Image (cartoon, rainbow, N blue to C red; front, side, top):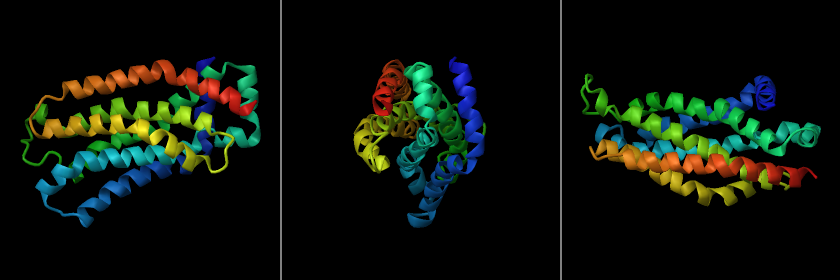
Length: 227
């Protein structure tokens, strides 16, 4: 059943690819503007790169949350899905599809933006172990699914509210702060030649915690919102 719902979400997303591309474009543009606004000097860019890229990823995720339930809620199919299937499965399928379509592109694009922000400045080309863009990818790979999971709960709670995008931002931004801190500090630790396994472990633990609780919470809130 989950695979059927997931295939449905991916097929629907093909019709709205422009809306899904906007957060990715926003992510690229925000990071790309900083070398012009701050300084083109490599040491300066390298120092601020982890925070800039992670804040941009967080804001892009917030921007993409508008797409979570909007189409299905507007045409009434969301209520039918909740009635015919488990709300938890519906929420889980939407979370997985949402991350594949919006979170995964952020992860894949991040090495290019890392190069733009001079993350590998001063690192030899033969030094794979010191490739800071790989560390950036790993941190986003663990962090962006957690952002999507928390965002799903927020969108489920505010589904019936007017201007729910603004409301969900107020609700979930405080919950995003730990992910932002540990995500950016992972890359910073790599840049400063410190160990970053602890930060990655915490990001992984937060992801597992969100995977256990968020789909059930989102499903429960979804059922209440459409009833």
